[in-house]
Image (cartoon, rainbow, N blue to C red; front, top):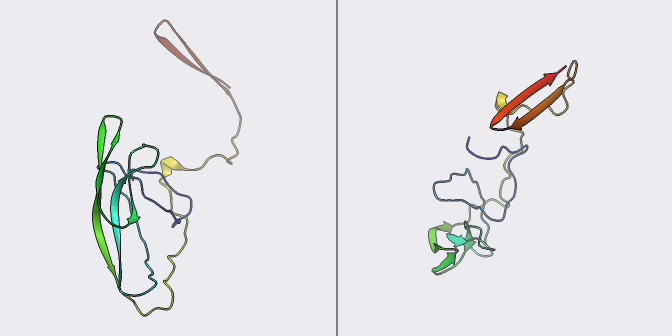
Amino acid sequence: KDGIYLDTIPRDIGAIYLFPGARADVAWSCTCAAYPCTAVIKSIPAAGGGGAGAGAATGGGGLAAIGNVNLAESDIMTLNITDSGVASPSELPVFNPARPCYLADVRHVSVAGSGKLGLQSGQGTFKVTWDR
């Protein structure tokens, strides 16, 4: 896992922001006013100049500059959407994914005893103390 763990999935989002080499698991459902229809997934510079994002839109391309980095606006794929014959799209089941042991939530765990943690630094040295 190389991202943020969510407490509950799935969730609705309006855009996916990815940097080069990033990965994401995404599921979407499409509906159209009239079938068949198309949707274009494209790469676009993020609003406010924060990076690149992907979202559904239509049409062309261009080039945007953020600082000294040029970000291409480009179509990634076109979805050809047909009527499945189902009255409404099925919903994905909502669940709480298991977290790895190193991400256990200990915010509400009772601890037997307490202590005081001390951190000191100076002249290139560091000292950690634990007073129980």
